[in-house]
Image (tube, rainbow, N blue to C red; front, side, top):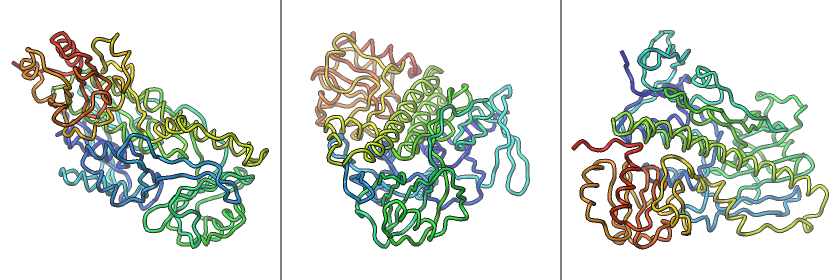
Length: 506
C-alpha cells in the first residue's frame, strides 16, 4: 500500500523549497535528510533577483531581504586593485536590482521555518539506502540514526540529495560534462582591511583567481585559486594559510581572521541527461553543477523545485494531466542547460580576461557594450529564463503574435509580482467575449481572472495589444498570448488549457 504521495530526499535549499511549495499548493510531503543537525557552512551565498521574485510570490521574500547583504555591484580588478570592469544590476527590469548575499545555512533556516508554518518537518538522521520500482510506485529503504530500518512506499520521489544523489543513482543516470582547471579554497572569514566593503570583488592576476564578496555581520565569502598540483586539505586551512595565499595573490595583508568554515573544491560544468523517469524527479545539484562564479547553481535548483511543485500538486489533485507532469523535464532541461551555459560563459570570459591582462595593459582592453551588459546581467540574475518551445505555451493567432514586441509565450511576465495565489491568471486588457462566463465555469478553481485596466497593467509589457489578453502560469511565466480577445481566441485558449489541465466537472 502507498503510504506517501511525495518523498523528498535531501533537505538542502532545493529539497526544502520543493516541500514548501508543495505545501503552499496543498500537498503534504515527507522530507528526509541524512545529516542529524543543520550545518553552518556558507556554501552557495547568492540569491538572484529572479529568485527573489519567485520568493515574493511564495511569501518569503521579506525574510531574505531582511537577513541578507544587498549587493548592487561586482568589480573585476587586477592585483594592484585597479578596476577593469564593473558589473551593476541597474536596468534589469526587476524590483530587485541587486543580489541578496547570505550564507547557505541561513537560506536553509529561512526555508525550514517557512515549511514549519505549513506544519512540515524535516526528518533528520534518516539515510535513504535504496529507491526501487514497485507495482504501485517506488519503494525506499530507510535507515534511521538509531539503526532502525524502514520500508516506505511512495508515488513519487524528488531527488534533492546533491551531486551524490541516491535517487539519480537509482535511475542509473550520471552528471555528464567536465571539471574546470584549477583548485580552489572557499572560506567564510572576517577581514580587518576589506577591499571595497559594499561590493563583490574579483581579482585576476598571474597567481590566479581571487574573489571576495560581502556577507551579513561583516563577514566575507572568499574563493582563492591555488596551484592544482599543491596538496591542500581542509584541516590545513588555518588563518595563517589563507592569509598567506591571499597575500601571495595581491601582495598585501587584509587582516584575515575569524574563519568559521573553509573547504577545498573544484568547479564543474555538468548536467544529467534525464531529469525524470516519470516517478523520480531530480532537482538542484542532483541534476546539474555549474561554476559558482556566476552564483546561479542554487538558484537554478530552487527554480527546479518551484516548477515541479505546481505541476506535481495539480496532478496529485486530479486537476493536471500527465502531459503537465511530463513538461517538467522538457522545460527545466532547457532552463538548466541555459543556466550552465551562462555560468560557463562568465567563467571562461573571466579566465580569458585574465590571460589578456597578462599580455596587455588595462587601457588596451576594449570597453564593454552597455546593451550587451544588460542582457548578460538579466541572464545571470535568472530573469532571462525561457520556456519557449514548450508544449505548455501557445499564441492566438500565431502570425500576429510574432510581430509584436514584448515577452513571448514561455517567457517571464515582467509584472508577475502583481499576481498572487497558486492558480493561473487570465490577464485581460480589452473586453470579454460573450461566451466568457461558460469559460469561467469550465476552469473554475484553476484560472483567476484579472482586469488589467483596474490594476494599471500595461499591454505592451505583456506583449499584446490593448484588445488582447495573456494567460500567466502559477510560476509567473506567460503560457498563452491573445492578440484580440474574441470568441475564437477564447475557444483556442480553452483547448490549450485542456491539453494539460482537467476542467471542473459540470
